[in-house]
Length: 391
Image (cartoon, rainbow, N blue to C red; front, side, top):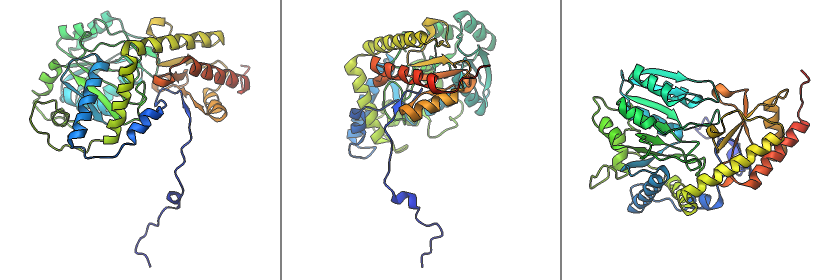
């Protein structure tokens, strides 16, 4: 008689079945076979010299993607939220002032993370679909004198691509670090970390890069490193402590690397391959393709009588489009119908945009004219067959 009180689950005697699906939500995006195959390479030790070479390649690719020469450039083991916490936990100490620009959910999340570690958090806010002028940002910097200013470049909950020019200079003027979230925008819209004087920049692997979720590129300027490595207190997270991560990634100039955590080596393979794909296409070509495809999609939506949520054409995120929820329809019925009938994911709103929009992601390999035609056909079909209220 077995001494086990928990029996083997019957479900695990069945084979794993995962459907193929068209991933046109705000992320994750579809992973091309080439990147999936890279991740299927043999597992070797996370401290083996071959892995360190792969990590070196990743660092070079991230520097290219971010347009930075920062030595302190690496990929955190985790999703974009992990990099977000890495940025905040290392750059902010309890009692310091943080200013977060809130024009969607990511400014809200950054504010909450900073609050949790004891920062004095202030926010500036605009309604969903809007963005801040440099004058508004300078006024807030002068008033609150933060140690760190957070801004989402690509606000995926509202579909806004926030202008960056001139903000880095303002942060220099008011002696604060400029922290930018580029999870939804990097590779799909122009961004220049060094030229735009961004101090901390991070992204995720699962959007334009088309790699599986689980790695998050991040980079720190010399100015950011000076603050971080002269803290009065240790960062609240051991796992995200930059002094340890810098050593693991060979960014601290020390001759040997010390065990910190077991890096996700197969995820590193996938990330390296996704960066290789970006390098082969060329960053500027990728920016141009995403913009052209977005404009083609927007024109198709407007020809159907649908309205784009972001009024300013120049502030529309080319990777994630927000569509005003069609009047008289239940947005959940639309997304459910499209998933069931077309095996295609699009999404509703998130955070402050819930109930206001539909969100469609066209990122990396999914950013093409034929994929747009597929989404437009699915939307036409849904509007034809879903219930429309007469009220």
